[in-house]
Image 1 (cartoon, rainbow, N blue to C red):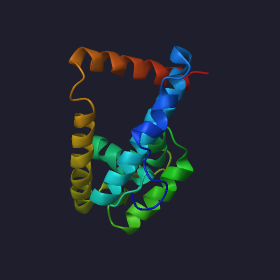
Image 2 (cartoon, rainbow, N blue to C red; image 1 turned 135 degrees about the vertical axis):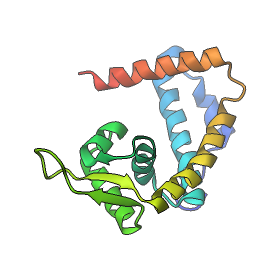
Image 3 (cartoon, helix red, strand yellow; image 1 turned 45 degrees about the vertical axis):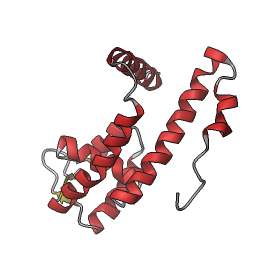
Length: 161
């Protein structure tokens, strides 16, 4: 897997996966998120050369077409400093373009993908989409809809005071 820790084999975490029953749903969710992040990181390294923080920006800009550091940080639930650091690297690589700020706050420029950034976005997105499709290929549509509702409820609950 390149740098970092190798991915866990299923036998390494399965004995703990079921421990604690429903009371440990959060543990299983964190475990799944960690394994998902590792796999997406690997796919990004192989297919786009993006870090996860950079991908969070590129993916949002690929969908929304423009954003500020604030809007991109809010959209990825990360701090502005992380977005700023990733944005500097993307600008150096000429994958994002900075646009002068408009409106009352001139300190907030907007960013958009360059033509090269759009191509890299598409290149990186394809294997990630295939990976996600394989993950859920045997899951019934109704279960995916229910899982999405659960993820939304969890996300909303994490954002509420």
